[in-house]
Length: 383
Image (cartoon, rainbow, N blue to C red; front, side, top):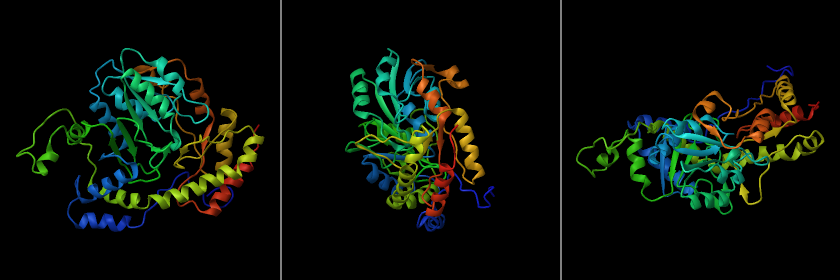
């Protein structure tokens, strides 16, 4: 219990979708609980419809989808992959595992996405790919980044863990790169506890991706009757989720529009009712550029400095509101120093990491609790 005597409002609470428990029971009773079963096919179909992707493969996590993308690029030791420093560790880990070098680029001060103006200067003769992360489900400057990738003959990969259902211009996020990865972790808008997907937007990738996901074998072709026995074809791993996971995900994807409607209502209420307080206290609110449809995945505030950030989180906690910071810069992390290199300094990333606070945001956050969060924020005095 908080000092207010009311139950603490958690930072996140996973939504249970309509039919979720029924689908889980159905998956158990139908006797097909391993991967690539009936619910895997249903969830994949819903995902393709939502993203417009011709090819999509469910995976055990977004991390594993990123690892598959690294395998599909045939990266060698010493190859370089450009990415933001302000991102989750999986973005870098997936490529460092193949011996590639993550090259960290600073983020923009408005959207917190990779600064597209800094990408070209980070390219060397060893660069193989650019990985963008659509932070908070707000699209990166994809027309500029796509042009840079094309000009230099580089693969473009979208880490779209935050961006399912968002768009940049008239195109859905996840449709710009040759590959894109999705997350269905319990903290995401649509979740199945642990899960992910790899979207394939380039001809010729699907066959290899299927082999890599099936431990490097053509097992899927065997079960479709296309070969008489399956063999080890290339290096891969077991990235296939259980059909139980797919059953839960199917129900979540069917509820996608309702989940998004609820989340956007909370996001917009925060944005509107905290606007005056933010301006008076030099607190930055999220920026969504014109032409971007975001996902209401994160609502964050950027306090003036680290001292205020820590004080603010403590203040909210005493008011019964659980708030949290976000990424620590990868370029200065122990593993980042060991496995990667920084392109030209990341001062914006360092500042953002010290100042950012995320407020509770989930589909089942009711109006009374939203009001409690807002009142707790408004009662904080920046020093």
